[in-house]
Length: 321
Length: 205
Image: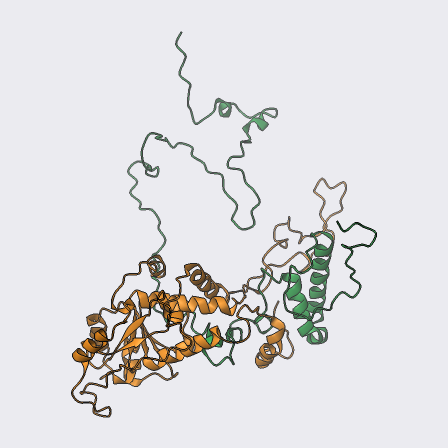
């Protein structure tokens, strides 16, 4: 699944999402098709919600250039299984139309897979093995090879000379520039391949029925696996109950988004609020004053990390190493 | 005169000779193929034995394994392990790895490594900080506790650090000045360093 996404990332099949809206006439035709007769926003869920036309505020986006394609996405709703579009959103080109740096995405995914690894195996050297202090037999006149200790590496049951030593980690951090670029490229890939779906809100889902959600996803051609992104940690009740029954449909908060998950799941469904939040956060870091090419220094975080784990240590026995 | 066809036998005539005290050495196989090299990463290669197997070199494919006549015992295959790709830890793998960028910046992913021992959280891995650096860091944290409660382990730790220091100082090549910028400890500048690349008595041209 992962390799399939990366392989076809640059196909760039142009569908409605990538087409720029330059003329006002196209907006007018859109208005004609989708304007609703009743404009009540607080009416019950059976009536259509307010369609969204107002252009989104794209912070510090280069709108004057004619060389930059302006990415757009449909805003739909989860009310019933038929895909009814209620708006068309402009997306920020720096986030959703970033140059497809597959090498950076690869580095991000490799980093995510490796930086948390720990190996607890340890082999003992001849000094650490029990016994082995005495010379087992004298060097001369025995007819045997010279031996200094029964725990030497050439002995059966002896210590290992250059073995695996103690708890070992593969920890390293990628600089912020690479991680942000990886996120932007992954979002670009998702949007460009029609795997990004933006929804007004998850609480519009009518019932906690898993079959309904499955039919909805099937009808809209979402894919086998779907990742729902929402801003708050607590998910909407109906969606949470429906996703609990389907193993490949999962919900994540916005701060949990990452390159590996974006490529593992075939479809990414996020709310309008989550889209605003993600854009704001990514753009904040892209335009922040201090450098993005920062190195992780252990001494900056040492006190915090050690203090957080204070209660884990036994007062008598130091942890095994 | 026609040449006699070369006899191809898997048994050598030497093997028919009864071993005597002088000809015992002839039975040893010294061909050393494939060559066994001490490779710590892989298991030791066992010499492949093909006695009795009739190779068909002109076959465009792979021959079936040799079998005794009328032997229908199936091959032993390992059991197929079905991996549940949507188990919780696999479905949410990598979550919160970008929490310092996408969250409010108060939490760093190094703080979320609860499965790693306390003194190794956020500590650079073996590719940057080797065993010596790791043990010195451990010693800094647990010196008092080990000296008081577990003196034997303390002694073993000191011995290991001494050995590694000796190994790195006498048996390994010197590193360049800033090759290993680990960011673990505050590095004092070398006050006695003098840049001798420009000297007044040498021509600058």
